[in-house]
Length: 93
Figure 1 (cartoon, helix red, strand yellow):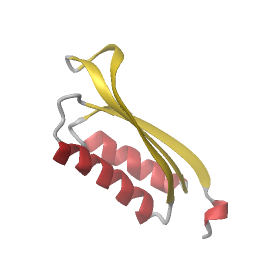
Figure 2: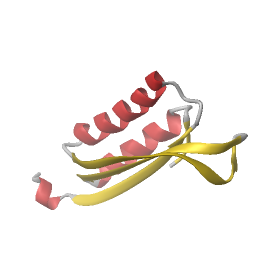
Figure 3: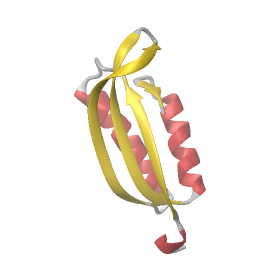
C-alpha cells in the first residue's frame, strides 16, 4: 500500500510533568514504532511543553503536551492508542 492511500492523522497526548527523560523517550519510541510498524510516515512531532491542565488529572495540575502528525492507516491509529493506554506516564491522549 502506498502512502498516498493513507490518511493524515493527528494525535496529542499528555504525560506527567515529573517524568524522567528515559520515560519520555520510551513513550516517543512506542509511538514511533506503532507508526512505522504499519508502514506509516511521521510528518511532524511538536513538543508543546509543560502547560496547566484544565482540570486535575491523577493529582497533577500540569502536564507535558506532545502532538504527532502522521500518515498511516487506521490500524496504526489503533496500535498507537493501545500503546498509550498501557504506558503509565501518559495522563491523557
